[in-house]
Amino acid sequence: MPTKLRTSNHAAFRLQYHVILSIKYRNKCINAAMLYRLREIFANCCVKWRCALVEFGGESDHVQLLIDGHPSMNLARMIGNKYFWKVRFWNNAYAVVSAGGQENIETLLAYIQDQEKPSC
Image (cartoon, rainbow, N blue to C red; front, side, top):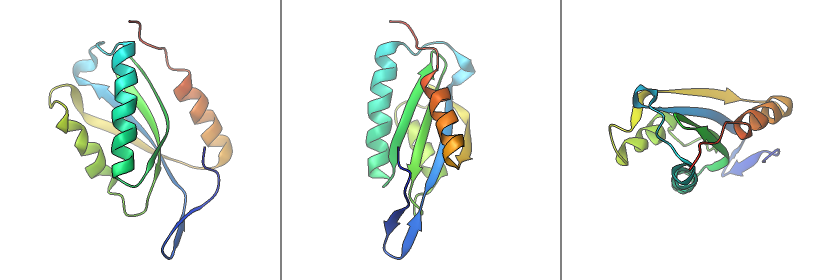
């Protein structure tokens, strides 16, 4: 969990976003294997966007990510990349909340980790 400022060129930053993506119609279709694979996909996507996946969790109808962002990252465009996998899998809407302060981050980490894991 990054607690220090990151630097890039002439900037120092710590940008953290809590992102929630839900399945279209909140269908309960994510199983444990899918959740594991989604974590890999989102982690790889974050690297390509010069950010990091700090935490990931989800239930059978949604996923939650804690992303450590970069100032040049276009968050809406990055989230739009989810349509690359399959247009009809994800709901068109999503939620993003900026996260700040160590206490808030610790609470958020615990919340994401405490998601009810889908079964096989």
